[in-house]
Image (tube, rainbow, N blue to C red; front, side):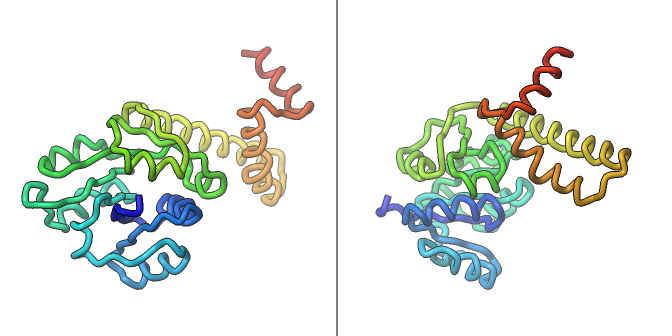
Length: 227
């Protein structure tokens, strides 16, 4: 992997989470942001990072796009890279709601690969062991790079979008129901916050791991009996 030039665009939560684990594994990653001050502040957090100029992006082997869906096509357009005019990187599309086919249609001469993260960036940052979804058969360098972050599974991008949407819907629905129920009972906001940030997340984690305590098991049993 030392012989490959890898770049990251997107310095938000997902970019930070990935960079943290690559830093732990001493994998060199170039970082680009049009605001050089932001890029420098980001790179200063990680010993494995270095700054990239716009002119250097086309010389990379991999360019990871950890950008919002609406920003990816405009960003690639601004680079003015043509795949049939010489060397160009593999573009890694990580935007959940932008299907990679849409990028490939816009830029048919470029190598674009979809590789999406299933989960929340904070979980990846704190625990690692992420799950990434791709419809493509990945090149060895990409598999090696992302194996430092977790596992890669071959699956449709539409499935990933539905899973994330469904999980987010029920998470928000549950949070809103907790807020409403606590308000009806007149509980302080401090208790609402504790329920949302500590009790509920840890109960869900324990449920998924099969390690519920006695109190929670009794509640789960009652819920199952009423289904």
